[in-house]
Structure formats: C-alpha cells, structure tokens
Length: 243
Image (spheres, rainbow, N blue to C red):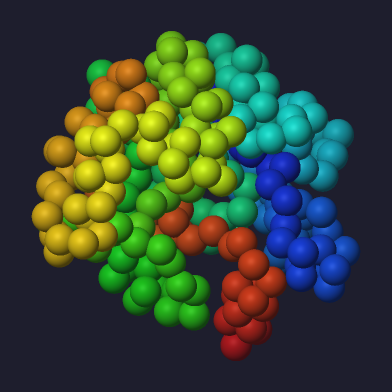
C-alpha cells in the first residue's frame, strides 16, 4: 500500500477562529471528535498515515507543519518510503474509505499525478447546502477532490515549479508567465467556451506543466470533494447532522 500523507495545518478562516477558538480547520469538532481524527481513522484502514501539522496527537505519526502549504507538503514527502503517496487534506468530514478505494482502483500507475474530478451534480445532490467551485469541460461540469496520488519522483521533479507557482499565487501576471500561454488559454477556454476543453487536453497540459504525466480520474464520490473552508459551511453541516 502507498504511504498516506495528511495535511492538517491549514488555517481556519478568521470568523471560524474567532467564534470557535480553533487555529486550523482540522481542529473543528465533528461527531464527538475532530475533522482530523475522522480523516485519520479513515486513512488508517489502509496504512499508518503521516500527519503534518494540526492538533498534536501522541498516538499519531506526526510532524510539525511548515510555514506554508508547500513547506508542509515537502515535509510530508520527505517522510514517504513508498514510490507513490496518497495526499489527503484534513478538512474532509464526510470522507469514506470506499471512496478512496474507488479512486485508487481507477488511477494510472504510469502517471506521476492522479487527481480526482467529480461530476458537480453529484456534490449538489448529496450536499446541496455546500456550494462548490467547478470547471466546465467538454464532458461536463466537474469539481476537484481533496486527495491526490503522487509519484515521489514526479513530486521532486515538479517541486521548483510548485514553489514558484505558490509564491506567485497572488499575482496573475507572474503566474501566467510560469504556467505558459497555452495553459492560460486552456483555462480561459473552460470559462468562456462551454464544454470546449476535453479531459485529455487538460491532462496533457497539466502533465506538461508538472513535468510528468497527469491523469484526471472521474470519481463518483462526492465526499472527497466536500471540504469545509468557512464558518458558514461548518454551520451548515452541523445543522445537517442535527436534523
């Protein structure tokens, strides 16, 4: 089985921090424990996961988070012993082991990056109270998942471009220079031309950007795309769990 890295240090939004007294989203109370405890329990059905950041748990394989997302990702990857690792974020309160199995069973072992895309209508049907961002492709409307199967050598090769992209995340012009005109054109096509971009074209462009083959895995599991990133979303799932 692949190693699993859980990123748990993501900061909660200001409103959540002020009203609930938590620093990271992974600390949010959920069904008698926390988001992190839930995700760790699910991941533990496969292997003993590596947790980066978040609330300390003496019984977890855990390392401190970095000052940024990329630093935390680097720390997690440095502890991986397998040829691939499954990256999971700790803000997935509905995550199921069967959804992970479904995703893994459809991944391409020759791809450096396997990323799930989920039909938007499935998320809207299962979690109508939670809005999701989506990408319009020729095959339909999709939202992304919060897990990713990564080949460790592909990660190391792509790390410089990942770091540069992260550093330029607040500057569209700089990010455009890094991504390239073709990538920007593809993104614009998905926004401006309905269903213009087929999935293979998206895979090819992302693979070129990350310097190794990429696979967009169509996954019919809304839970892996249902992350909680605001106080209002958290309140919505609390109300749902009480009804």
